[in-house]
Image (cartoon, rainbow, N blue to C red; front, side, top):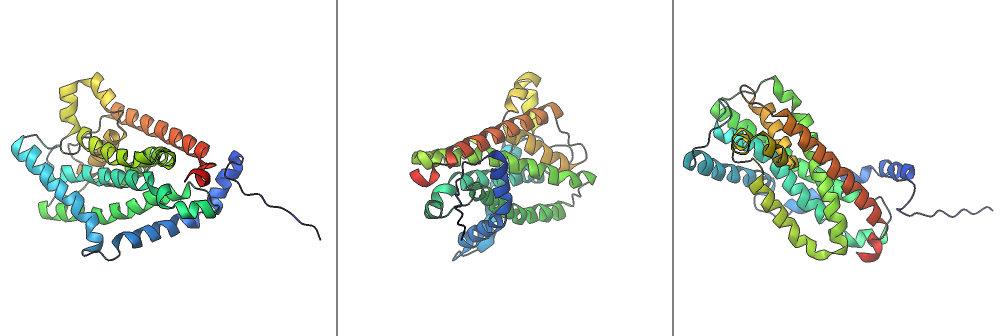
Length: 279
């Protein structure tokens, strides 16, 4: 009887790598469902945690930037809705970056024993954060009802900017995940990156204010932060009316997002063959 030996190794040819990823596609949802169940198990308020964090942050930022600093909103939109329209993609980005950056270390026993494309794990972490995003979106609907502020046709473009937010989180997440496997102290760097990003992203204020302060040229450097374009796009889609998006800045953010994604994938694939040995 003829015997065949099947050798499974993550460092295969490019075509086989992506074919493997498609073959194991069910794992994306299995890992995501497992993470969701583990996150809210034995919690007091359950999925409300996905709502409380962006809601409370929105309230604080509205009080500080609108009531105390006197910064303007965009067009006729209530300041609270303008802030929450930015909090949605930012919270999605922050949760995704934190979860994907620590995802490989958190699944060390599985990685060291079973073969599957390791890229599944960080992507599943981003999918889990997307579920939280959908839950938090219900607060935006409630705010619109309270303020009687109705969206325009632009709301139909929101899935495009949501996909952009997904890619913005995935690129840096893959990069941090691959580094964190070898250098475990990077898990302390990830919260600092998220906190620093909160301060430099236009969440509590309009990008129009930033552009007026910095000028056109410096604003383009500011737009190298991928979340600048994402937040601008979310506000343009949700607020409608007089809300505008600075398209050169959005193009710069899109370029930064794609660049980070390609770097993240390349770094992840290069390091993947050693994950089981060093984790």
